[in-house]
Length: 164
Image 1 (cartoon, rainbow, N blue to C red):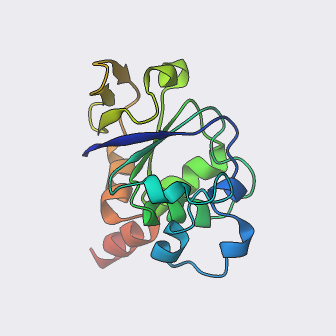
Image 2 (spheres, helix red, strand yellow):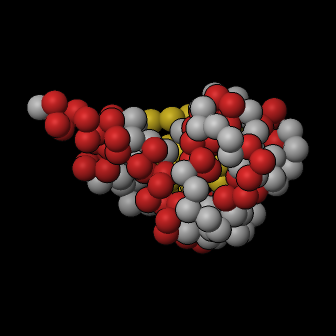
């Protein structure tokens, strides 16, 4: 999978309540949640986002509760990829389960700036900063995880496997 979009950089320890505050958890509708994505961090944050833009985060992105609404809201905002220094483990698993691509890059996160145009290549494990020319390497998404992503998440993947 290749995605090109602009980076929206956020800091360290962005918790699930910043991603989607509890007051919006009355639905699982991705579009509705997407309209309120990151409103716990900054009201109107999502208004700057265009389809296929990319969140660039510091360490421990997605910490806090295990709510699946957080990755759903990111996807609902049109963001297919989050690149971070590191992820909270439960968010990492929930993200893939819902079909959200998550890539860890460690300290190389500093090579990806707010507003920079990025191209993410999950198959080769490369993030190209089209603004600066830097290329950041990360682990490619394993084929079995890519299968989950391609299916639209774990539930759809399981349905397809059962139908076979």
